[in-house]
Length: 114
Length: 113
Image (cartoon, rainbow over all chains, first blue to last red; front, side, top):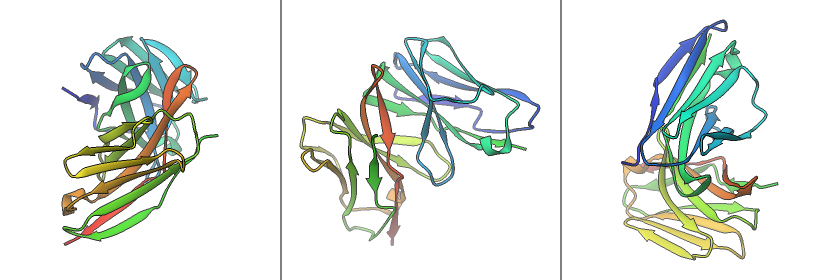
């Protein structure tokens, strides 16, 4: 199983809503990542969790709040987003706290903020 | 800082070979990756190479690494229409104890029947 599962696949939310994106993997990977990808652009790193602890926050606005409840799950809580936050949000995982070969992405959540 | 460069477009005929090129600047890069992204989908890991290797072959895919010139290429043999996608090159080097990849802008591969 080399699968990273993200839910939901699509999400439309208003600027006053609170929603969460979920990511799950059962490969025993101990590092998990959130990326944001705008159309026709490469993915941009947002957060890295290593052994369930936040190790990197790429100066992401506080309206994005990550959470790693256990080694298999990663959440991204969204609150008071702006239309410019509309993008594809990708989760990735890797074996240890490093992108060391086995590094897989999920299919993403397509987020639209209205 | 790190920088990864790729040409934006490549057009080939079905059955031909495709070669997608990438250059990077960080000499401490340890892992180099090729990902494929189809429209509306996530990134699919195609292959990766460790920086002490020159070449890696996996079925129709051949990766060549010239570490001296910091040049990475992906060759797809017998290219099919299903290979049409965006291909991202990425290099991972140590940042704060973690290997964080830097992605190129992606090469759109268009395969004509």
